[in-house]
Every structure is written in C-alpha cells, then in structure tokens.
Length: 471
Image 1 (spheres, helix red, strand yellow):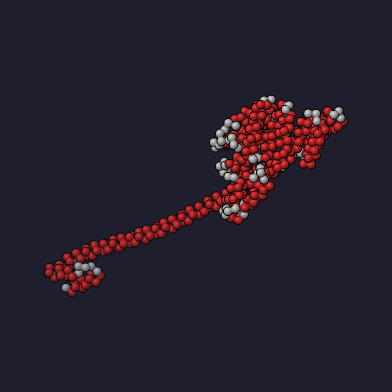
Image 2 (image 1 turned 30 degrees about the vertical axis):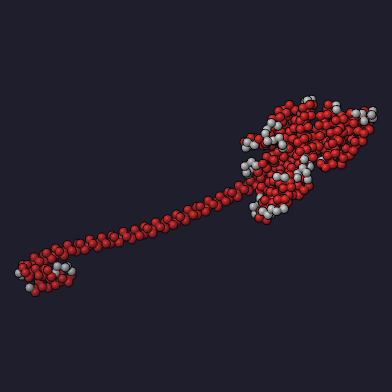
C-alpha cells in the first residue's frame, strides 16, 4: 500500500484500531524517506494503543508494530542501545502468538543491531532463529532474508567464500527480486567478489544493486551502492571512475542526512586524490572530513582520516606530522575498542533488564493464573459441596418418609393381628356358649340367641350371659 493511499485513508478512518494500524503502516513506509515524521506517527500510534478503549486491554498489535518502527529508526540513526531495548520488548510481545511478519522483521532488526556492534555471535543466533522459523512456516522471502544476514556476517569476518555461498543462495528465491533485502544481498555479493579480486562480477552485482535501490527510492542505500561501486573501481586502479561514483554519492548525501556515510565518502575521495598525487586537494578534503568526524564523535572515520593524513604527510616527507597522526590513529583505535566494549556492556545491561522485566511479567502472570485457577477450583468445590448437601437433604427426607411408611405399615399389621386373635377367641367362646345354651333350651331358641349375637362385642357377651342366667 503506497504512502499517498495511506495518507488518504488516515483522513477518513474512524475506528481506533484501524487508525493505529494506518499510523504504524505509514510510519514504516516513511522510515527511509522521512524518519522524523515516521517517529511522530509511530509515537502517536503507540499512545493510542494504550488509551481510550484500550486503557484496560492494550492493543497488542499496535504496540508491537510501534516498537518495531522505533527500533528500526533508532538502528538507522546509530542509537543501538535504544534500538535493542525497543526491539527486544517487541520480540517478547510476539512470543505469545504464532510467528507473523512483524516477528520476522524484529528478528532481522535485532540481528543487524548486533552485527553493527560487532557481536556477530549473538546477531547470528537471532538470524539463524529467524531462518529456522521461516523454513518452518514455509516463507521463502524471509528464508532468503536471513540467509542474506548470515552471508553478511561472514563478509564482515572477511570470509568472502562462505559469505557468497549464503548470499548467492538467498538471491535465487522467487518473489524476492524486487525487495530491499534482495538489493542488500546484491550489494554484499559485490563486496565479496571485490575482496576475492573478481572485479567484473563485483561491478555486475553492484550495478544491479544500485538499479534496484533507485527503483525503490531509498536514497541512503543508493549512496551506499555508489560507494560500493566506487571501491571496486578504486581496487581496479580506475580512479577517475571511482571518483565519479563518489561524487554522485556526495550529491545524494544532501538529502540522505547520513553523516557517517558522508564522512566515509569524503575520506575515500581524499584517498583517490592521494593516489593521484594530488596531495594538497587530498589534505583539504581529509581535514574537513576529520573535523566532521570529531564533531560527531565518529571514531571509525576519525581513524580513517588520521591514517590518510599520516600517509599524505609521509608522502610529503613531513615525518613529524606523519608520526603525530599515526599516534592519533593508534590512540583512537584504542579508544574505539574501549567505546565498543562499553556499547556492548550497555546493550548487555539492556538485554538483562528486558529479560528481568519479561521474567517478572511472566511470574506475575503465572501467579495471577494460579490465583484464578485456585478461585475457580474453590468455586467448583463449593458447588460440588452444595450439590452433595442437597442430595443428602433429599435422601434424609426420603428416608424419613420411608421410616414413617414402615412404622405406619407395622402398626397396621399389629392391629390386624390383634383383631384376628380377638375374632378367633370370640368365635371359640360363641361356639362354647352355643353348645351350652343348646343343652338348656330347645334348638330353635338357641339358634335365635346365637344369631342375635353373631357380631362379637362386650355388650353382646354380657347379654348372652344374662339370658342364659334367666333361663
């Protein structure tokens, strides 16, 4: 999505999350062309991602992309401590989710930061991790990008053969040929061939790299490709062609705002004048480069300038000046080594702090999860106990009902038994009485008496007794 299209969408969008995504996307697109505005847009996105409707639940995608943008912008300006801090924070946030484009970008940024600090082992570790993830996810473009990173490491270690094996492999991936990663690899391949003395191949790949950077509109990298080609011509001894490329790079530097690269170009231009025995012009250029390097504290370029000055004064037979600048070169080299060590220590402190924060956050999350689990378990137990109590109450009532029915049935059975016994006794008594009466009166009268008192009760029994007595 182009910059103008993103700008147009940003003026009409109303949804909060969509606005954050557009701000981050536009900031990312502007990172090479307008880094100041890219930072402002990214900061706005970062703020929106934790405010308003996201105050309680931050918009993680927005935060991750904001940190990605800022880490890259800090990296491009040489602020490696802040760059690694933001990049590692972003990486930690991505660990909770499946790999995305943002995660691969962040891994690439981290590896390149470590490369710039000279910590190739740690940088390579992140590049290889990215390479493994890209292969697992079957993402050839990112596989190629991380192969290029590995090749770059070997190039910095001055092992051009190993560098080429990775860089040329990366350049074969389809769908990769129009990307900045591909342009970077082409430039690295050119540098590797230059170190191997294969200048024709170096010029071929360098020219292709320059053409792709121009089509992408990345001025800073276009400058870099021009310098790479200039160095190839310089190695060939074609100083005029080299000078042409360095001059073209200097012209672009007016817009690129890359002071370290500008000083680097000036030193190389001064070196060409030195090679052409144009010593006065060389001295003028290199002193200007040295003053800029001192003002910006750029020790690598200070060293280059001191070395050139020592050589120029030696060529002029001014041995005292040559020795003075050689000593400055040596002192700066020692100071740069100390500075590099301090930078690495600062980065290590940042890494340690980020890791400690991550572990504390993980511990807090684990404790929170354990607490939530304990609460859930307690609720489950309480619900189970309530169910058990209800079951027990039901069973108790059922048992009480059964007991009542049993007692009632037992009482009924006892009454029936008693009545049966009484009936048998009365029947027996009547039989005996009937027999006795029969003996006293005639049969008809006896039968009438018996019939009258067939139903046994206490009153009837008493009446029978009276009648018998009267007779």
